[in-house]
Image 1 (cartoon, one colour):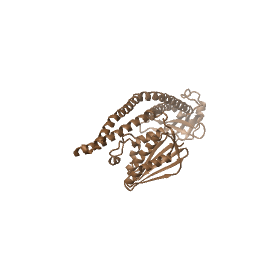
Image 2 (cartoon, rainbow, N blue to C red):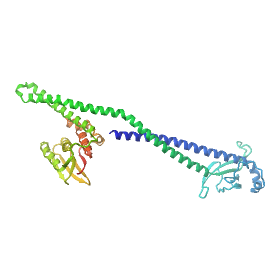
Image 3 (cartoon, rainbow, N blue to C red):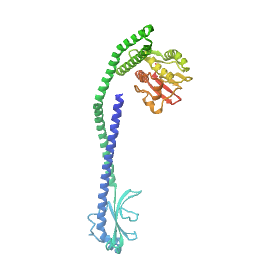
Image 4 (cartoon, helix red, strand yellow):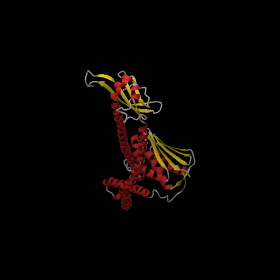
Length: 423
C-alpha cells in the first residue's frame, strides 16, 4: 500500500516540478529570443536611418551613385556579406541595392521575418519611410523607403543551442528533483508508516485480547439459554440479544486479527502451501451452501470448464471463496441465481462468481475492497455484517499471488473475477 502511495506522491511531485521548470524555461527562452530579435531590429534600424540621407541622390543617379561614392554615412556599420540595403521610391519600386541578399518582396514598414525556399531561408527586414518635410504634418510627402535586411541563420544557431541547453539542463534538474523527491517522500511517509504499523499491532493485540472475554461471555450466555427454566420470560430476548452481539463481536475480532496477521506477513511465504484441487474445494463449498440457497429460493449453479489445481493454504482459499459466495447469496433476492464458473487461462486459474443481486453502483466499485466499507443498499440487507469480508478475500488472493476484480450493474447483478496462479 505504501509503496504505491510513495510512487504516486513522487510522480505528482515530478509533474508539478516539471510544469514549473517548463514554464520557467519557456519564459527564459521567449525573453532571450525576444531580446535577440529586438537587438537585431535596432541594428537594422540604425543602418536604415544612416542610409536615409542618400535616398535623394539615389533617386537622381540610381545605383551608379552608390558605386561612385566611397564615403557614405552607413559604410562603417554596414556588413555587405550579411546585410543588404535597398532604396525604394514612393511607389515601392526598387531604385538601388547594396549587399548579397536579393529580395523580391515589396517594402513594408517595420520589422518583418521573410521565409524563402533558398538559402538563407529566414531573413529579418526593417523598413522605414522617408518623408519630405515634417512626417507629422499633413503637408509632408512620401519620398520613398529604405529597407535594411539580414539573415537570421546566426540567431537560429543560437535558438538551437539555447533549446539544447535548456533541454539538457531541464533533464538534469528533473533527475536531481527526482532524487530529492524520493528522499522527501521517504521522510514524509516514514512517520505515517510507523503509525500504521503501531495501529496494526494495536489492532492485532486488541483483537487477540478481546477473544478471551468474548468467549467467556458467549459460553456463559449459551449455558443460560440452554436452561430456559431458570430464566425469567422477560429476560429471554435480552439474553438472545447479548448472545447475538457477542457472536458478532467475536467474528469482528477474529476478522481483524486475521487481517492484521495477513498485513504483517504479506511478504512471507505461506506456512501451509500444498497443491489443492480447486474443483473439489469449490464443490465442497457449494454442497455446504446449497441448503442456504434453497431456503432463500436461489438457484446455485456451477460450470466446470477445466480441472485446475493451485498451491496455497486450503483453509484460507476456502474462506476466500466462501466469503464471495455468501455475499452473492446474501444480496440476491428470492428467485435469483448464483453461478460459479471455473476455467483455466494459460498458467492461471479463473473463477467467476456471478449473481443476479442488487448490484453495485459504478462510483462505489473502487471502494468495495476497503475495510469497513459497504454500499448503502448493502447495509439495509445485511445489518449484521462487519464490512470486512471482501477485504479478507482480497488479502487472501494477494497472498496467493492472485487478484480479484469485479463488474457490476445496479439491479442487474455482480460478477467477481478471481485469478490465481495454477499449479
